[in-house]
Length: 221
Image (tube, rainbow, N blue to C red; front, side):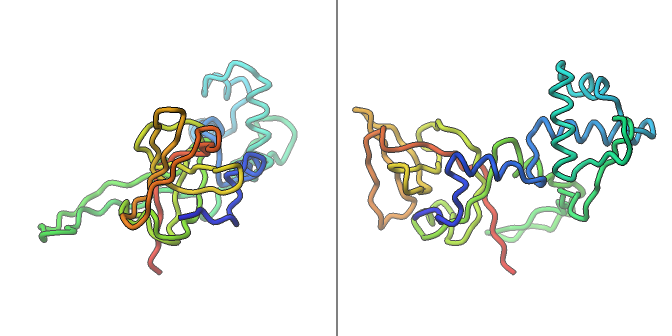
């Protein structure tokens, strides 16, 4: 199974452009946004840069300024007048990132329906610093429950442990989603989760890890 090449996000120079999306904030930017929201709700006005830095434990005023300016540039914040205490949050229709967890359902023997009252925070589950999404093409991972056209959430990293499902870039040309194993003699084995396919074995210098699988998405309508 190959990762669709129309998703060039795995290549380093394109990754930075993707992460600039206003819908994909880094962990630190999300902390700044959440602090500003809580401060406005509590005090009726936005915090100063110093207060933001103290609230999210950033000592450099310049770093705070860069985070805030980035949020403004991405449309998350706006500053209608001069002065940092005039900051306003831009809430969009898709601002909610939680869904209600209503209970459990049997996938085997029927069980009693038990209503629940929790919520699942999709942002915590799927979003995060240096995460991105790829669409799967092919059936080489079907035994792991990863089907053709599924969306997979990837944590960007250049290292992975044996047994993890990774995005592997081979010869800097072809990306594939496979289970990783390190072999003796500086070799890498990439294993498909499909019993009809044989493992791929390469010298380690031909394979670059681009990320590790952290989540999966599939829609039915």
